[in-house]
Length: 214
Image (cartoon, rainbow, N blue to C red):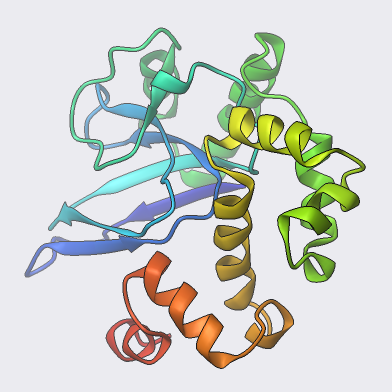
């Protein structure tokens, strides 16, 4: 998907953005500083990023396993330094500069086509099989069955595709799905859900709801 995160006016205090891992990779562009772009992703724990009082970021979110570029391109923390990698992200950022978000989406589509052409992204059939069958998957073994792979093959593919172990990948996906559906669809009981939620998100479900009003 294509996304935008921006302030309309300067904020009275710094905005702290609590990011929850989702196993996705993002292509990020800072519209207030054309030198700042990045490929970003989180591991298995949430992070709070201080975005300051004024910010304007846009980007492309890729499904898990779609990124096939160098793993050392992926940044895990706040992106606040000039991009020095080999992908022409700075050229893309200049193309995006000054455009309305609906106009930027045309450029995003061109970027996607370019990344496909240079084999930096590609559809990942194994990941799609996991996502489509997630409600019926309760273990790494069941994940292997759903993908018709051995557990060893599955471990290698998921590690190469996401940087996560199959067990950690499953935990992250479950948390994301629990925001959309009944958590008992993905956890054995409430205690199991609370333990996993706190470990990944950094808060208990009740504290998270209270703090972020969701």
